[in-house]
Image 1 (cartoon, rainbow, N blue to C red):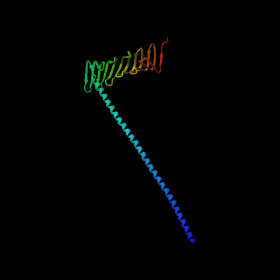
Image 2: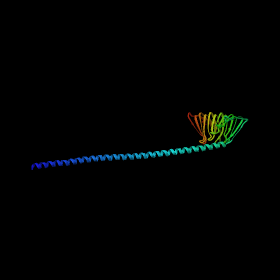
Image 3: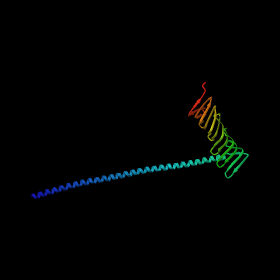
Image 4: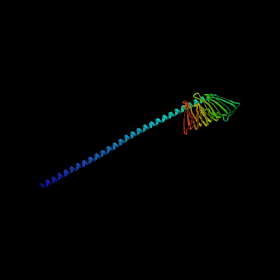
Length: 281
């Protein structure tokens, strides 16, 4: 009897241990499954996030590409438009130039066909675009539309300016004239006479801006000015004389590196090593 009870107790202990072992095993397996599940969820979330980021990145890149393409197309269209406008303008300017008629007279005119060059001698007279030029000689390059006058040159411009010199070049396409050697200009600014002498004078005939160099002398509105360079801006109505400047007006003498004369007001501004002499009453 005692043996049976002992055996039963042993069986109960073994059965209880087995149950506990299964419980522990189940818990371990449950935790393992949860870890696996969490790992799988994390991996899936990472993949989803990567896909979202890749999608956003691709969308942004596509937008940038579309914008760059749009800008490139716009620039191309603008460039084509500007080129067309430039060609039209050049064509119109050329046609206008071609419509202008020039008249040349002289005692002798020689034409060199291979060079498309005219040589005129003695009593040369050219009428062009309201300008009249007299000289002893003329070389007219029809390819470049440049006229070189020499010897006793006299130019009368359409607005009234008169230029005397020994040499004068007219660039008919660029609207520029350059006079050299013993140059004299008789002009008018603000209804007041302006007389200028120098060894070099350049005039932009479309804007009436001027550049004079070497032994420049100017008489204007009671002012007598010496210098080595003169720049005149017609739009600003400013005349700048520089290099070894001397200005005489109403008995006073002023020397400086540069003097700016304001045509409209009649004022002047001297700058650099300014020295002034005047009488004290």
